[in-house]
Amino acid sequence: FVRPGLALIDGIIGMEGEGPASGDAVNTGVLIASSDIVAADAVASVIMGFDPMKNAIIRGGYERGYGEARFDKINIKGDSIELFTAKPFKKPKGMSQKKILLKYFPKNIIKLIIWFLGRMPFIKYGECRGCGVCQNVCPYNAISMKNKKPYVNPAKCRECFCCQEFCPYDAILLLKKPFVYLHNFLHFHF
Image 1 (cartoon, one colour):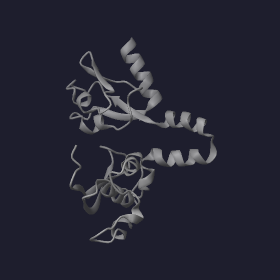
Image 2: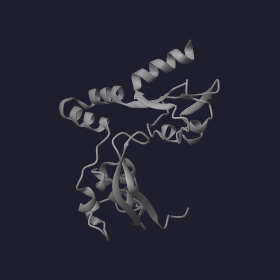
Image 3: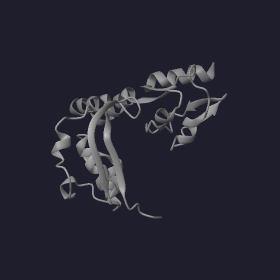
Image 4: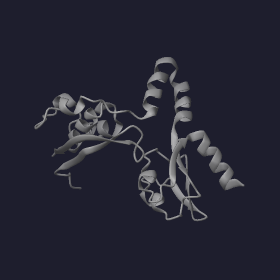
């Protein structure tokens, strides 16, 4: 109901590689402030080496009129962005795999391959204490508790990995989907 008046992004220490909780810390030294929340995300995206218009959330915000995502239209004050883009960020492994696939395979085959290469939350039941934090933070209601342990519904999971990020016991890994499907089937059916 109320449009945010100020967006702050603390990128003084950023993260590169595999996120959201298992990436590598990088001393970026950037602090972004903007009255345009979409522009703030777009600038952060460019600093990390991504095209903001290829990010569904940033592009969606722009298309709905919430702010500016076209980097060439954003007025940046303060330090030059080149200061922060000199060293490229390491990308998540899945991104380079998708680029290679797009070059050599038809779209339907790519969707199947990407599914096999995709990752899902995997619960390390030996370390899980059944606290339910993962269920509470999942924005897609993809996690339910069964026998006081979390179960991830693959049909609802949108791979945001909030569950892994918020797990206080580090009991959630990100593993390839076929392995997680097989494990869940064996764990909950036998």
